[in-house]
Image 1 (tube, rainbow, N blue to C red):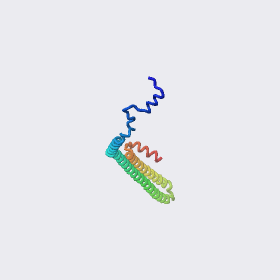
Image 2: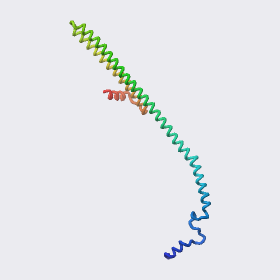
Image 3: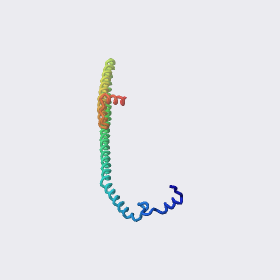
Length: 181
């Protein structure tokens, strides 16, 4: 079949009898199309309001609840860490005060011994001073050991509370030792 431009033009401009053209553009079907569009829209709206929106709202509420719980746990961990840090600082301050008091007491004792021994017992005063310094060094070492042990226990507890992992006492002691050098 040979189709020429005039035949094509005539076929496009004069539709075949019984054909109404493209159905959505047929004006006599507009009312039924609008009716079914409205029905479909209402059903879709009902579905969205009854199924989709509650699910999304539930998901959002659950996420907010989880975030609030995590923030509360983090805040509690922060408070515990601050309390532990304050305890640690107080322990250090108290240990320093006791050390100063002990040093002052030891100095007073040594001065008194030196004054008494100046008349001829200078070597005896030196021996007493050495004993006092050894006692002080032992007390300092003992105090430092107690503080380091408490700090290691606190650090292990903080790590356990904050990230939920257990830390061996050796690792905690090594971490405290690295910080206190």
